Amino acid sequence: MTITEKVAYLKGLIEGMEIDAATKEGKILKAVMDVLSDLALSVEDLEEVVEEMGEQVDTIDEDLDTLETEYYGDDYDDYDDDCCDCDCDCEDEFYDITCPSCEEEFCVDEETLLDGGVECPNCGEHLEFDIEECDDDCCDCGCDCDEE
Image 1 (cartoon, rainbow, N blue to C red):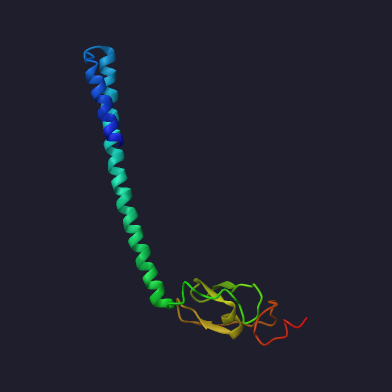
Image 2 (cartoon, rainbow, N blue to C red; image 1 turned 90 degrees about the vertical axis):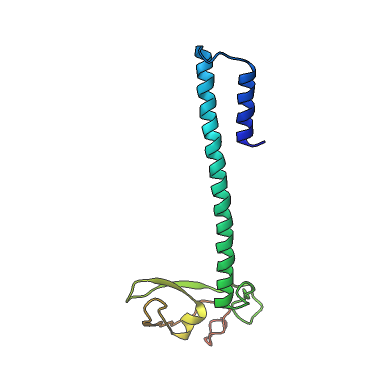
């Protein structure tokens, strides 16, 4: 039973009691029923809007999934969590970089850092990284970090 149906039921009960609307009690009950009716209609309208917005969010989510798949490829959802070819349980690490030219922040993976540079996706400026020592115990960067 919806809120609107419940309010209609209450209104019917009050009318069935044949309460005189000219009395103090009758005036109060009529005013309360009017407020309840207005609230029930408002709630019904809000439920419709929320349902419509939920459908729109679902559509946006599906569109975003399609774009991610087209941009990152079919392997986007099934990426390998291993950071290297070893049998350890380490995961890819990502680092936030702030471009000194445009001051926009973007994210790069560890491999990009080890490569030594990348272009800023916002302004195109080439950024160089000077990585002296690798702290990761399981990488394939070519250093001797895994030989301790």
